[in-house]
Amino acid sequence: MLRIWTFQDQWWEKERALQSSPGEYNERFLVGLDTLISQASTLGIRLLLCLSNYWEDYGGAMAYVKWAHAAGETGPNGEPLRHREDFFTSNMCRDWFKKFISKMLSRTNTVTGLPYRDDPSIFAWELINEPRVMGDSTGDILQNWIEEMAVFAKGLDEKHLLTVGTEGFYGQSDSEQSKSENPVGGAEKMGSDFTRNFLTSSLDFACVHMWVDLWLFCDEVCKLNFAERWIAGHLEVSRDGFDKPVILEEFGKWKPLEVRDAFFQKSFEVSLPPTSPVSSHAGGSLFWHMDPANYPYNEDGFSVQAKVETDVARIVKAAAQNAYDSDTYSTFARAVGESMEDFSGSVSETSTSDVGTSTPSAPSNPPAQVAAPSNLPAQSYSSSPTSSSPDSGTDPEKPVVYMSPSAHSHGAGSDAPGAIPRYKFDSVPTSGAPARQDTDVDKEPEG
Image (tube, rainbow, N blue to C red):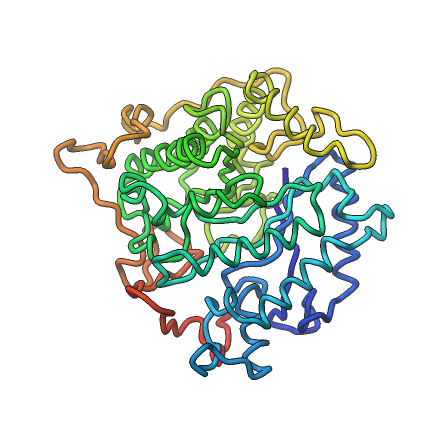
């Protein structure tokens, strides 16, 4: 399965945006999307289409806020709209975003002639990537927005699955044990509430993201142990709470390659049947991000070039084969197929390819698992997903305390040479919308 951005809101150059202003669309970009969907169908690739972004990459929430600000909309106390969090409460932003949802979900593909809502190559729609409402410890603002937009989207397309691309931070509905696993300082005040968000009846599966190099200041063993607990913990919460599949929708790891390969292998083991400790709810993993060989742009340090970095390709294929062969996968695939019976044409079990792999087919002879790198001690592969504190890998009497870039001044989560962090975390206020200068509508983007 391939996850793609299905938006491009007033980017650096207005004429290059899919949506240059509210309701103004560039048909050339939409025809390009039609072509992509058509080619994916031919190749047997399923698509997860994301409709917006909390971050400013490709426009997203902040583009809508800037439009509303320019149109003169103000907040409840007459204050100007200035922060990306206003996206979730602004009447104009919500109305414009609904119109965008309607535009996309109601479109007919100009290449195939098939309406998007009837196209089985589209696996699911995602409302927004990594939504937050900084400072809202109640979680009410984001929850209200999710419920409103999910019902609206399902009213337009009830055939496809629907989700929200959350990072998976635990909130007020989750246990104290779960909240203690939040890797980012103040995560419970960022508006996300994993259990409450995915109890929303219009959402069909849950999403979790994992960025250990950006979230944690500790050694590689600590990061690997955290990854196992983070994935398994969310599967357990789903099993015991809202009973929906969970996809590890984004994860990545900085090099060296042997450390990244071990991390990928562990992530797929825990997030895919039959090796997952909670296989019944393990929906799979999507790593960030695949690039062609010698691709020159790797600004975030997470690029995977599978043609030349062959170990990661073997890891993904082996995980796919194991999942395809498992009884849990067969049950999951049948369930997905049954949920899509209303589509024109039939959907075979193989076309409902496992959501945990990026390959349309699995190898007939999967290779043996990649061995642990020599610089990681053995206990990094035997940590308990339910342990209350991370193992340091050196001294069990002195567990490593998780620290995130939010505890420092816009620092990276690692000292990996040449790597640039994807996100800049600020301190989180106790309540109310933060005065985040990096999202000020009057500030020009960097770069």
